[in-house]
Image (tube, rainbow, N blue to C red; front, side, top):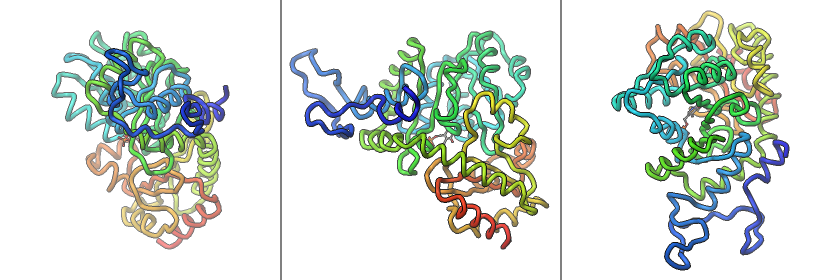
Length: 381
Ligand SMILES: *Cc1c(COP(=O)(O)O)cnc(C)c1O
């Protein structure tokens, strides 16, 4: 089955009791047993719920995986992966990691005896150098935020295999429509479903997908034991959102390209970070592992003044100033005072996150309106 067909049909069936074509919201905590030990496959909704189950099967199919698990947030999904490790184990990850993931690693799991290394992962040799006999997990995020660096998943899977470590890829920015890490050698895929998969800025959710039966057993044991599961209503909303994932992401990519090229030509814009541009330092890797380049774009301004960036984000009318990304509506953000505020200036400037950087989540509105909004905001400042 091809992607769009799977997005609409995988994991879901008309309701057997009524014929309802949409998966019902099974808003129940428990299930009546016919007798002791005899049930219809569901015993308690922390362990499994039919609405969540349909979504987990759908997500597994979209990532060309076998087993899916949904969590109360993207962070809860990452938390589950880290709980597969033991004290003394070591993790290698990228230096421009999502801030919440960095915080979870450093302030929660470090105190349980897990050691973390952060390195620029666009250089596989630098990652290999950090491998030792304790290396158990390589954590990749690609594209990264906000500079849209692309990490070579096949190269990372070779490093992970040599180290006998698990490779997990945070595929939130790319979505399964543009990139399938399991096909490129990853053992696990993680999503903040909150973003493109949900797609309508109305749900916070996370997911893990794997084809490895042993990893899946651990994943479900931890999901049930820690209990950070997602609710039936949210599962329903995401199942509905996913039915248009391929259509939305196609439009995000088209709009993303037009906005990126508009910004490249604008005299007040300095650098543009979008992996589809031939000038992007990792464009070749992006082309080899992604089917399109998405709607996430960052740019900096000539002169690099904080006040210029603030003026632009204040002057947009269609773009809403907000954290998050991946919804149908266009969002604008200023990493230095929002998502990356906790990182010291010197550190963030090493990775290109300068004062005038602006990040866009280009939505699926008509692109003429999106560009007109940016044009008037840039001209006004
Ligand atoms: C948002 C995000 C997360 C965290 O997901 P939540 O659903 O907010 O908990 C993790 N990784 C990336 C890349 C994200 O954008």
